[in-house]
Each structure stands twice: as structure tokens, then as C-alpha cells.
Amino acid sequence: MTAHATILVIDDDLALRQLVASTLKQEGYQVLTAADGQEGLRQMYQGHPDLLILDIIMPAMDGWTVCQRVREVSNVPIIMLTAQSEPEEIVKGLDLGADDYLVKPFEMSVLLARVRANLRRAASEPTVTRRSIVYSDDYLTVNFDEHRVTVRGEPVRLTPTEFNLLAHLVEASPRIVPYRELLEQTWGFEYIDDIDYLRVYIWHLRRKLEPNPKAPTYIINELGVGYRFEQQH
Image (cartoon, rainbow, N blue to C red):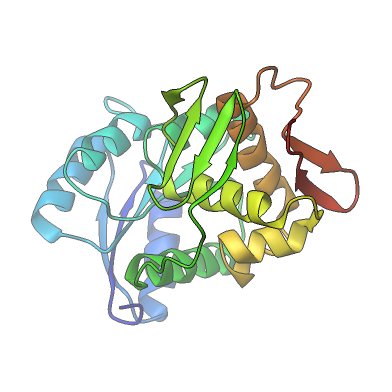
């Protein structure tokens, strides 16, 4: 579902919107465009695209609102475009259901790689190869069979990507998982050099799971090497 996929580009920047649309068409994709959030939602409901490329900062209806509205009715992959590189801004989009993000300015080759990766993940069949409850202590429980994580007995909502990232770390424990290995296992080979991308997701996971995210005890960074999951006893 990649070569003939339909992609909706929502961005109020005319020059960027036209450049992205033209590049995607050259790659064989069908392209829909919208200059604002409201028009984007209308195109979404009528055109049923296979993927959205969504700018955040737009007048009237911003990308966060569009993302939230789309997630009420569809699981279509969403790549958010942001001029903000701060983790808080990026995580807001991820919390609302975005699958991916790119910080402006970006290379078109990178956008195309992300488009291919997200379409591939959306089309792939989920596989269950993990054991049952792999980790549990008085604070944190990770249950692979139920795709469930609890903190102090309360369920914690993780996106599929966040759960897969955590699962790779838990399964490998106590081994240090190199940055590139985590990126390829969780997102695909297109991401293996984007360590900053991994840091954002780790930062997000720590906020959800750690007793003190600023002094993590579960997800430990071995500087220059990778991350490991530290089991608590």
C-alpha cells in the first residue's frame, strides 16, 4: 500500500505545501492538500487518505486540534510538522495520537523515508512473539500478553510505539541496547541515525513511568552507547 497510497498534506504555508505535494506525486503517491485545519478535516472525511502530513501552527484550527479530531474516528498514520524542537511541544502531538514528527526545516528525502516507514508499519500485520508478564515489582508491571502497563496498580496509557520501545528494553534487560538497535527495532531502518528522536520518546516514557523522571531508576542512559532497563528489587 505504498506506491499508490493517498496522502493528505495540511499546511498553511503555500510554498511548502506545494513542494511536499509535488515531491510525493513524483514518488507515485496520490496527494490531497489543504491550507487549514478545517479544510483538512473535510478532505480527511471525504478522501479517506492512507497518511496525513500535518502542520502544527495554523490559524483558526491548529494541528493539535486536527490530530485530536482525526483520532476520534481514524487510526490513519499522522506525521506532524513542527517548527518547535522542544520535547514538550513534540510530546503534546504524540499524546494526542500523532505517530511521527519532523522538525522544520527538514530534508525531503527524510520526509519520504518517514512516509514509507509509516505506511509500511500501518500495513504490516501485528505479531505476538513476547512472553507473558516479563516484569513486575511493587511499583511497575509490564504485561506483554495484555499489552498493559501499570504504575502503582493504575493503568498507564502507552501508544503502540511507546509500548514497543519499552518492551524492547525490558526483554533485553540487563543488556544495554545500542541507540541504533532500538531505533531500528522500534521504528525501522530509516530512523537508525536519529538519536535525538529516540531521546524524545525516552523522555516521554520516563514522564509516564518513572517515580522521578529527572532521576530515572528504570530507563537508564549509558552515555554514548544506548539505554538499558534496570530491574528493581
